[in-house]
Image 1 (cartoon, rainbow, N blue to C red):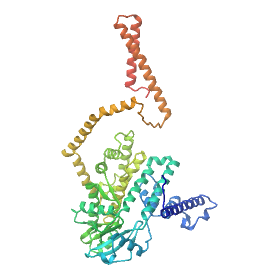
Image 2 (image 1 turned 90 degrees about the horizontal axis):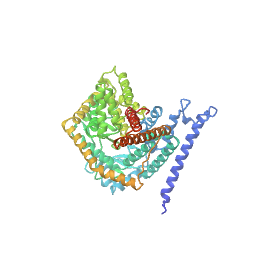
Image 3 (image 1 turned 90 degrees about the vertical axis):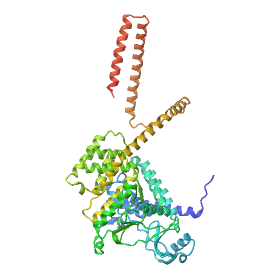
Length: 550
């Protein structure tokens, strides 16, 4: 069956593909010029900084900016992944800003009317036809509904989904090429990172997902009087149109302005930090980008959250890690922190645990001069991640989102109150999690899970054995084995084979001599054979018991 492409969709793909191709070729050409001392003077001014040619990380940031919004957003994700890119490149990627240019306002209004199913005047008392912000995905307007409610309107760019899906396809292709050319990238699962990013980005394209996140946060945080989550007008919203309550306030990154307007920066810092920790420890669902641009300070020192496109979800194991890390940090116990890190990595047994624990202990020693309350919590978490990566252990991708959120909120709090301690605020949440885990209810739940697992094991064991035997009998039992050290494996197989052969020979000698002695064929030869075989049997048992030669 032939796959038919309409020319209207095929042509943009070709154009975009060629655009990306020429940007990559230009990047390669600039790299070649930069590495040649005779030709370096021909490098364009755009790739120079204060008269000096840009470094490779700087050129990579520049080419990502040229590639457009999808690649910029992916670069921003990589900036928080020390397991994938070097520190120098991450510092450059952190500079990426999605400075999208707005598109025609009249075209945007036509799209809004199309999604609403009628003219603007039918739904709004007032509508500002000049956009107030433009992003890579959409454009934002302000208006007043017929009910008198002031709202912000987010409308998605035309045909953006097709462009982003094409870019994601190309990104995945590049990731595959990287793995083929540099097998080391398999260890960090770069293809998996691209796929995870793609799934998250595609979800952001559906504004109803953002609407759902906003309503979920409103329900989660309704018990906090100092937290404001904008109302969602879900009856007017669609997958490409989102209408939210307009919240207007002061950005929290200007401490002097807050004080001048009668606000309490210290209280705002503490309450803002508490909001994020409530999300993380109580609900395991949090705002993944709580920077000052997504926060507004309202009257009464209330904090309003906006932009719910990026969120993070934590599993119970992630929360146990945070609790264990906090407890270990507060008691200066490297063993507790090591155990929590290995649990997070899914490692029940780790050969280098002792060495890892020593590295954690060494890290804690460097922070010993500081009291617990003065410790930079997010910095210590990042130090632990660096150590884990040195031991080639893998961390869940969601942990990096969590680290970014914690670092952002810690910086937010410190800018408003230099004396604030995130570690001190986290501690009660961690202690509560540990109390719940070791409470009677928590222990009973763990025992129930264990009994249920063993029950399932005993129930399924006979049928699984029957299936294995059936497959073996029919020659369909296949098991894939990957050998990393073929020489060592060959030696082990030979060693194992010799032990099997020796066991069989000694076994026959021992059994034969016993049989002959029992049935009356007793002689000096049979007695000698019995003695020799008994001696070698004991020797073989001792050899196996003490694993000689392994």
